[in-house]
Length: 358
Image (cartoon, rainbow, N blue to C red):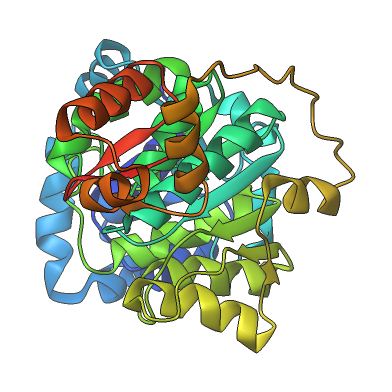
C-alpha cells in the first residue's frame, strides 16, 4: 500500500518538474501529502505555481491510478525511496539538490558500500579502453563498488569489467526505466539490475534529455568516495562529475594520456590544474584510502622463444602486425600462428586496425 506521503512524491515526479518547482511546492506545505489535497481542491498557492497548466495537472491527478502504478512496480521489480525514508542514501543529503525520490532495481544497500566512480569519454581510444579495464578490474578485486552512468565507452567498460570479475556496480541513469538509454545497453542494464543496482530520480516513463545527464552526474559523484576520470576530452560531460566531486569534497583522480590525443585533453588538464591526483596504477588510489592491495599469485607465463620476443615488444606499447613482422623477422604464417595462440591463451589482445597489445 502506497502511503499518502509517497503518493505525493510519486505524482510530482511524474510531472517532470524543474528541481526548483518541485522544491518550492514540497517546502510550502508542512506535510508533503497535503500537496495532493491542494491540487484536488484547487488551493490558491498550487494554482499559481502551475499557472496555465493547473487544469491539466488536476485532470492528471484525477486519472492517476496509484493501484496500477503499484502493480507496475511489483511486476517490474522496481523499488522507490523518498528523501523522508530511513533507507534514503545519506550520501545524497550533502547535495545542494538531493533527489526527492529515487526509483531503483536491484540491491539498494550497495549505496552504503565503498564506491569509486569511473567516468570518461563515450569514444575511448585503445589506450582508454585498456586503462579503464585495468582500473575497473583492480578496484573491483580490492572491494570497491564501481559507480558509473551506463553510457557508451568508459561507463560501459567500467560496468562490464566489474561484473566480469564478480564485483558490485551501480548505474545511475538519466532516464526512466521504460526508456533505457542508450538502447544498445539494455542487456547490460538487465544484468546490473540482477547483480548490482540501477538507480534513477526519474519517473519510469521519463525519456532522457540534454539536462538529465548532467543532473544524474551529481548523484554519481555524491555516492562515491572518489571520482576517477580515465580518458576525457576538453569538453567531455564526464567533467561535470569531476566538478560535482570537488564541490562535495570528494577525491578526484585522473589518468594521464597522450598529449596528442584530443580525448586526453580533459584528463591531462585535471592533472595540470591541480584539480585531481595523477594516478598511473590502481595502487595509487588504494593508497589514498589506506587499502593494501590484495596479493595475487603471479601466474608464470610459459612462452617459447618467438612468443617471448613478441610479448616483450608489446609491453612497450601497441604494435601493428607489420611492426611485429619486421621486429621478429618471422614469416606471415608463423607470426599469425604465434599471435593466434597468444590471443587464445589471453596473453595478448588484437585491436582494430590489425594492432596488438598485452
